[in-house]
Image (cartoon, rainbow, N blue to C red; front, side, top):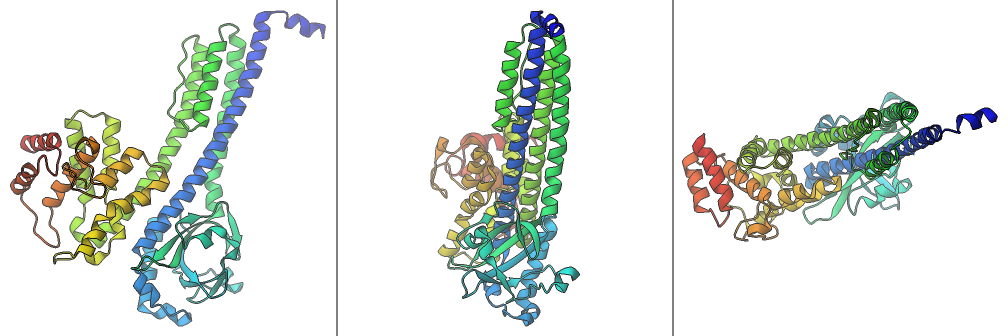
Length: 466
């Protein structure tokens, strides 16, 4: 005891000891907060992705063909079953995370559903246990509240669920007929093993970050005794920002090398977490790009349209002096701006004759469909506004909101010009492509009415330079 009193007689020693204890405690708490936040965020994003995949997949299913499938074992031989099953297999192939994809509908018995289409054959073990998924085979859906809600709108399980088929996390979306009535539910499943594999990587990184934090706390605590209060407060403030989801926040500390090293380690930790989130975001964009390819496969006249629009938009934004981050945001919006056309019938997209008013209304609705598809993924609000408003006109006669002038963001104005120019210079089912000179004249003609004068002038300057 006397030895301890002698050691702690020094103020510097006491401060150093308190610093070490405080920093270790702060490191553990911040790591736990970040770990919990990351796990919760990752699980939430996985649920959102399952809902988006289910929702977009449901839009590709022909409800009329679905309703003609006989609900008995011979139903698998029906041409309609083979068509729908083929569509579901393509969607599964494009989304490697998915293990099962299927379509069910209600029966007259409360909580009991029946299979319509399941393109994934049961395994030998599942068959041995008597599990089959032929059209008309019954399934007890009363065990899964989120599945029961799916007739009203997209949903996903809030936790891993177990049934006779295994342990999975599932997303659901309704399939609606031409009148908007939900006639069936499309489900997509991810197995528990895949979910655990994703979480194990988070476990490993959390342990490494914790160990690094403890080691750095010991080293820095032994070297520094004075002037430590302010840097500690900044580190704690940084922890709060990270715990709240601001993974791009950086701790700025001026002082001794050791404290500076701790700040850099903290920022590297935040950067790793930010990059992990960006990887998940990139997975989303790859998924959406795959869906865009499905769209372009349905509408052969727009193949490559999104990539060209993205390229034009990038050139315009760069010429107008916008920064790299703003240009990246614009390019990403341009790549997925037409995803709402997944909700438009293929016969309308490829129709050579003049569209009826009802068909035009379906076309005009696609920006809203795109926003509804993308909103659950918490995309940047400005990006959602670009996608929703890319058919607005400068004079206020566009759709869906009839915004005009500066009420339309400059990025949306850029996307509108790029989209219209590529549409004019590309062939369509109802007309031949315009040559560059004809398209330029159209831009000049609609300058100030359909398009922003400043954006048109910038784009025409780029064309002249090229």
